Length: 140
View 1 (cartoon, rainbow, N blue to C red):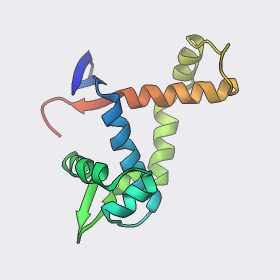
View 2 (view 1 turned 120 degrees about the vertical axis):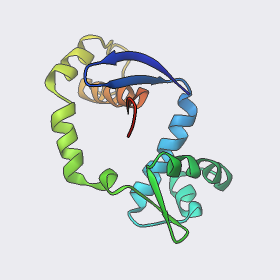
View 3 (view 1 turned 135 degrees about the vertical axis):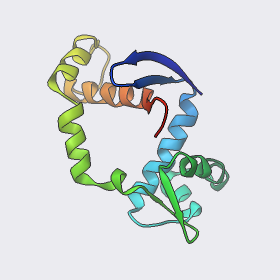
View 4 (view 1 turned 180 degrees about the vertical axis):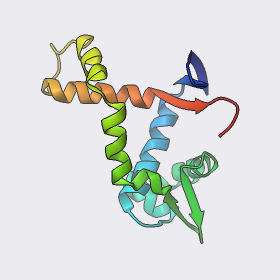
């Protein structure tokens, strides 16, 4: 379930994920499918993700329904955009701007961290990205 957080220009609404454990499981399954690099069975995905087959069986249909995984001939593969390195580089250069890094860093307490400051900043930005999803209003 997601709750509206804020309305921003351009008809895009941000939602805060309220069920982080399910989101984490879905992400682990999706990431495992990406890591495999080829269409895979649910069992292969479960092994790669380090999850039970039952848990993957339960969650994979959600990833297909959300359009993140595709099913072809009994095998699952991620959308091509999720494996496109050029697209990932473009996202990094356009989404993760210095202003965001500076604002996140300004609000962090590094006193208990075991990682260096850059690692702490990176982990927190990744957590922020995972907390929020972008949903276009009124369509796809």
